[in-house]
Image (cartoon, rainbow, N blue to C red; front, top):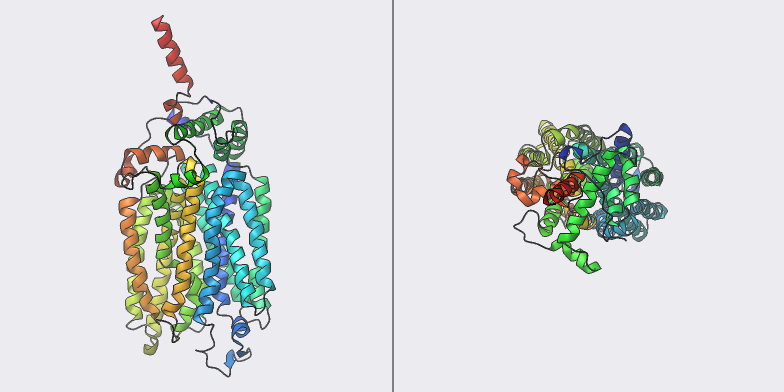
Length: 551
């Protein structure tokens, strides 16, 4: 019976046996799922470079460009740029599509499964790429293609996190989900490399090649997911226990008859039964409203969890990191003393890629909460330094090459602090925080929040930093804004983010019911859901002995 009661499965009261041992095969399955981050990163990365390409600018402005001297013809270099409104629309429309795609993806993932939803996202994304490649100077077609591609990325970005969190072993779940963020950085790096290679082409290949390469990512992910198993927790939610056992066996690399598989499955089933006993299933709208039930002051309430996930993704965007990756090329061009802004953008992307793997170790060694707090603190310092230098010695009129180099160095340090903290940790927590009953919708809402604020930042940033008559021309002063927002991120992490290191998804629920976020790091699990719901052989033996004593 889909979504209804489930057949009893006998488990254990032993806390050490609530998860099966994991083989190398299981690690590889989880690692491959992280490949979906390539979509996010690559699509974020190539747009920044394309907006600064001479051929692309000529296409949409009508200005001619002399490639032999690298100078525009009949117009100054300052005027040889896309309008702020065009840059804003072309960049932000992807995030608009991903926002709606993320919200819808949760429902589809609950209906047809996590795996088919991601594959469908690959197909939709490919259609969007075709439309972008087919456009020449047709802004409407290009923008519509970005919108459709965004819809597909929304499917992928939301459900990949859900899928990975549900299949990853608890001891390294943080590291594996952090691999998703690492793949985002790889996507950014690949985009920067491709754009750097095609930037000076004087034909449509300059922007069509970066767009067309995206088909490869869609093909690899879709083919791989045809081979990978479905999430066992999805099958439990649907009441398909035999399918859940086979999927769990595949994911853990253990025989389906193994006691380890039986015990872990029993814990998942018992937790689902516990949820159904406390929050019965209801109508379609009721299931959406369930995400917003409970008290905002209670850490375990659905409302508090939904706000935690959505606000985490909001604050991740408020760090200003995508200002660097969306508009870094044009911002570095404005500094005046940089001869190759594309190369500097490539360097910031390399810092992002090389720093993120540190989180694979640190997120399980120090925990999610620790990284968020100290990562935000580091970004506050770096961003205020960039802003202060930028309004003093680093002004374009000062022509101080050393000051500009210092700004770039601290921007790279800012990227480093983001890459080891808010980049991976925010995604890890979103995958862990929600109970099974609302997990797909909760992750969808959180991911939609990321893309909503991504869209807002993409819309307003050109008007904040551009130097045309319709813009604020803040320049480096924009880092005062990002630094102030990072102060808010630090406070949010300290007061509201719990520690979930080393806990199963079911144990996270127990922890939230028993302690506050600030005391969560010291909490230890003390009972299994299988024991709570009397799905253990130990419980049965106890009942039998009690009966015999009574006789």
